[in-house]
Each structure stands twice: as structure tokens, then as C-alpha cells.
Image 1 (tube, rainbow, N blue to C red):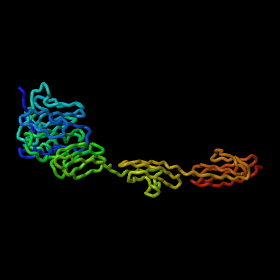
Image 2 (cartoon, rainbow, N blue to C red):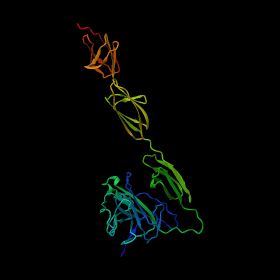
Image 3 (spheres, one colour):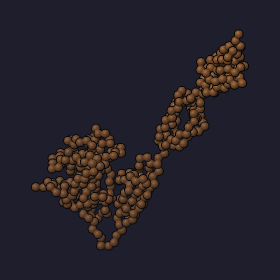
Length: 408
């Protein structure tokens, strides 16, 4: 014998009331973005674009899909606050879905149970939770009977929040589908003004979270059926400024929002270090400190210069993006000196024992010398050796005059 499970849900309908406004507030929301996604829907609304109506006693099928391997748990929430567990259940305990897999409950063939819509009339919901790890529901639900040991969406949210707390925040996600338990509205004999309007929301780029009157209702592009009146709409997307707009929903009309989202401009950090440390740092020609130095700057291109006595100045152009940290590590090069050697005769010149040239007309200039002390030696045939200790200063030219005497 096929077993029947009642499917449950919110928002009472009366025969004289207008069609209800779709109110897709989420039961439990992951606090951080995650690449794990789950999607749940009912068979009368596979695109999740409306709020389908099911008669009391009518059969219903629930479909779910995940984009990554995950364990899936499905709850039904009645308008009365009563909650039951659809998956896993006594006849279908396999709640592990592969990436990209779509599964229907109950399945089209071979099912040993059915899902039947129970009264009273109202707005019912189906909640799906996907987790990369199995969840322990022993304190919440009885899988054999499908009973959940609590009442109300708020209590379910609190209980599920406790269940997922041990998991990494990016390892679980939820989704929700809505349907109405009741009777389709009777078409009046006399034409009447439509009781609802449509809000169409799009953004560039797409994928922005949409909030209507402070409640999350989906992501762009999105189309919603709402009651007439003024509504506050908000769009949120990581890396972009929040978009807000107030629009008027008119009966039978479509109100469109096309938002060009503005990127959030975040300051960057310029990390400047040098070897040796203590170099004066100039940014666009202005002294900003000494290395090592962290500079918070607006995104853009900057002229960077480092100065240190006895070393060559360093200059470069640095581009800093929004929220970017750019390190600049500079090894400063010592300034070199030069030596001008004057002799009274043509002589071979040695620096610290290394021959560097010969004076021409009694003169020799030696470039690119490292700062420091060295010995200058002059040799000429028939003359005594002449030596002199000198100190080469960075960035300066030093003169040395050597007078060689004839050998006796």
C-alpha cells in the first residue's frame, strides 16, 4: 500500500481576498557566500516564477538539484506552523545527491509513498538544506514517521542553525519554494481591476541579491508578483555599492528596475621597504616618511622615489588597484666615486695592486670606484715608486698628485 505524507505551509486565503503576495523570506540563510548551491521547486512551478495553487488532497511532487555532491534534507512547513520531514523518510533514506543530479520526490515510478497536500488553506513552504557532510537530525525529527519535534518556522530556523553550527560556513546552503493551499480565484462576472502587479528587476552585472521591504526575495534577473503600492527595493552584490530604489506597483502593470551597479572603490596599500632601511620616501614628489613604510592610498598610478645619503636615488611608477596591497622592495645602490691622478712623468697606475691604466700627458681619470680607502701606486721606468693612500667619497671626484723622483 502506498503511504501518504502531508505537505505543509503560511498566509491564509479567504474566498473574498485578493491573490496573496509572494513572500519568499528564507527560513535559514548561510551568512557567507558559498559555491555550493541547492535548488528546490514543486511540480506546478519548475521555474519558480510564481506561487502555484494546490487543492487540498491533491498530489504534489518536490524536485531538488545540487551543483556539487551533497546530502540533502527537505522539510515542509504548513501555514499552521506544523513541520514534517520529506527527505530522508522511511521509504527513501538515500538523501545523497551527486553534482548536477536532479531528483524528484516521490519518484515518477516505483514509489512506495505519495505526497498529498493537507489543509487548511494558506501559504505553505518547502525548505531544502544541502550539506557537504551528513547532518544529525535526531533531536529534531523522526525519519520513520516524518514528524518534526517543534512548531513554527522560527523554531525550525533556530534548531537548524544549531545543527549546522559545527560545519564550516561554506559547507552548507539552503533554498525554499512556495505554494498556496486553497482554491483558484473565481473569475468575477464583471471586469475588475487586477489585484496584483509585476516587479521586474535586473542588474548589470547580474546575480545581485534582491530585497523587497528588507526581505530577501531572490537574485537578478527576477520577476515578482506583488500587491499594488509603494515598495522599497534594494540590490546587493559583493564588490559593488548597494543600490536602493522606491517604486510604485500598479495593478496589472509591470514595473521594471534596471540597475547599473557601481563598483566599490577600496583604498589600497603600498608597502615600501629598502636595503638599507631609512631611505626617504617620496610619493608624487611629496615626502611621506622613511622606509620601511605602509601607505594607504586611493586606487591609481603613483610616482615613487627613495633617497638615502651615499646611495643612488631609486624611481619607479607603481599602479595600485582597488583593495590591492602592492609591495615595493628596493635594494639601493651605493653612489660611486672617481679618481683623477696627476703625475710629473708618464706612469703606470695601480689601485690596491691592480693596474688600472697609464697617465697620458701626466693625467688619468678613473671612474666607477666603490667608496672607501685604497692605495694608489705610480710606476715609471728609471723612477722610484710613488704611493699614496686616498679615500674615495660617494658621488665625488678625488684628485691625487704623485711626483716621481729619478732612481740613483
